[in-house]
Amino acid sequence: MKRYRVAHVITRLCKGGAQENTFHTVRLANRDRFEVDLISGPTYGSEGSIEAAIGAAGIAITRVPSLVRNPDPWHDACAYFALRRLFRERRYDIVHTHTSKAGYLGRMAAAHARVPIIVHTPHGHIFFGYFNAGLTAFFTRLERQAARRTDRLIALTGRGIDEHVAEGVGHRRQWEAIFSGIDLSPYPQAIARRTDTRRELGIPPDALLAGAVGRLEPVKGFAYFIEAARAVLREAPESHFILAGDGSLLGDLRAQAADLGERFRFLGLRHDVPELMAAMDACAVPSLNEGMGRVLLEAGAAGAPVVASAVGGIPDILQDGETGLLVPSRDVDALAGAILRLWRDPVLRVRMSAVAREAASGFSLEKMVARIESVYDTLIKEKGL
Image (cartoon, rainbow, N blue to C red; front, side, top):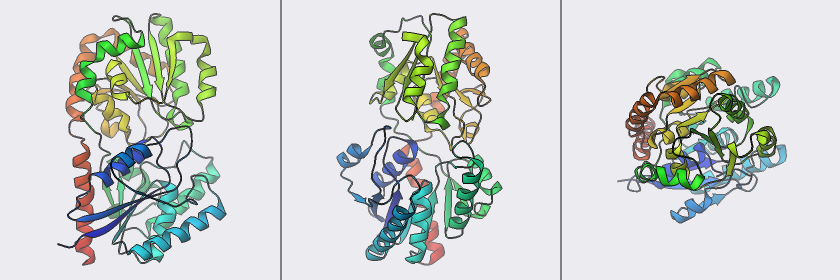
């Protein structure tokens, strides 16, 4: 049986859903069918890195130093030519790009290198929450252009497809929805350690603990979580709040929450996120834009009911009133009210926890990779490879 050569291309390998998705797609690839390479630019920034985990899995990273996150005409041109050279030299059958920068440069390079099959997963979109109107319009035009060079586009949810098609990015027939899976193995032990974790955090058994996890960047909306915490504390003064993660807004968010003292703690980058989530009575996801929100599944697997903004692909994943509660984006009062509702109704909280754990069990990494590789197989047949 022929083995097909596949290149996965991503801008950087920081801690994040897109990066985890890409890493595990490479790690769990069917090696009997596919010979898989991982290509990335340099990883930098305060969000942390998953490169150690990639190395521990025995995966080599092909580095393209000029493939940097921020727009830079010189580096972008160098990255394009470097990728085109790589694709030609290694004669890939499939190039699968991830995220916006690597997605545009990688697809254009693959098209000009005459790679037979080009696939792209945007892992969300840049239509709102990132740039001003002018830059958003410019990047949207680039996405439309690259879509014309793409055989299949993969969104994380059906809503993600709708949002792209509405902006003229690809035709609906090009799109397929495949969720971003999670590793379910750490969560049973994390749930068993709930009491110990709360004790280690200094949380009294009968106190509300609400938390959030993610990159401390504007699009994640954590400023609204801090204001919601302030509102909750007026109603439930014994409550505690934690925020795990790092990013460019750390200093601003610390300053915003300074008056809350020890009631609102910044935990930085953590390697025990499943345990932290299992210790929570409510997990807040106040995003302004979200492709899917893997954190919803991670919190669900940990048994933590979620309060999330009704943006992007979140309503496709979170079952409002069943696995968590949806609130309008940027609405501090609604976010605080939903957290208090969960705290005041322990029966609802326990029921949501059980339903969320069951729902999360259907989003394994193995199922995600199997569906992605089924897309490859379909395209291989269509192209007559």
